[in-house]
Image (tube, rainbow over all chains, first blue to last red; front, side):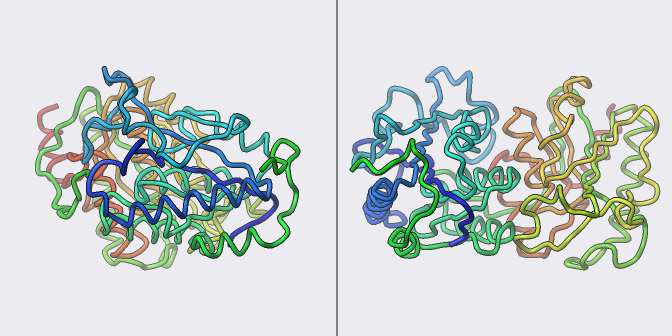
Length: 204
Length: 205
């Protein structure tokens, strides 16, 4: 683990609503990933580690899509579509922040930095997708904002296997201790977790 | 699923949209040998070609913006940049931190110093590009997988069209260089261009 000070779990674009997101339900072991994500969220809540939720959204008229149609992606994360909702089984609690974003980095045009300051965290644990897009680019901005980054390699999935592998190498370039597994996070959560923020006291 | 990028052959047409600005990212070293880790060969030729390209833009009155990464010797401004592959770098006062000879900004041109990887992060770059009413930025310099990639990303998120000149960028090594080219083409399918494409477009300006 790459932990200094206190820590937040950031769940990035774990969307898909009632079923697995776009594409093959078996891709990258989606169901296994979802189960691991649920366990990590529960584990963090039990230890008072704040959980922050990120959801990419775009209006159906696409005024807010920017240049995101100029590359490999089509229209995506349209507001009102069931598949845009956070994956069933995962849900923000009322006292948790649920941040909508319209670009790839979770910091871009959002209140994420304010929220992380409020929790007084120095370290982030990232899960979700795509590894090579919203995870990588959130990790890059976290890095540039001086956070210690932990990407849970078996709870992130990429736009393709190669892009996933490329992105993990890029994250490793930034911070050598940044690649961790769900088992390592679970083991870390079993240790005494320092510096609970009053707003994130265990409630479950 | 989104399309996977497998081919990084650069386009032979620039296909710019609106006004164009050339951004020269971190071509530093002060002309001194051994200023950068030699992850990829061809540095003298690439830097000479960058000087020629800047001259060609100036000849056509297309704006050029220079980016220079700098850190204080105390490293108070280094952030997390020592936690990964890089050691202390671009120290102010070190002659190797200066721009490559021939790439000195003119008085009317912007030299933007940055303390992070993206040229947009904590800098006036977006203000400057808005001033030029730019819609397309052309990127040359280094490193492909770090400052070029993350500058391209922020350009993309700020709604600019970006074009990375494949033969005028250099990575920390061949593998991550190629990976970053794929990543940039994922963002914008027209992102990768050759320097010939840029010269061909300049002739039409």
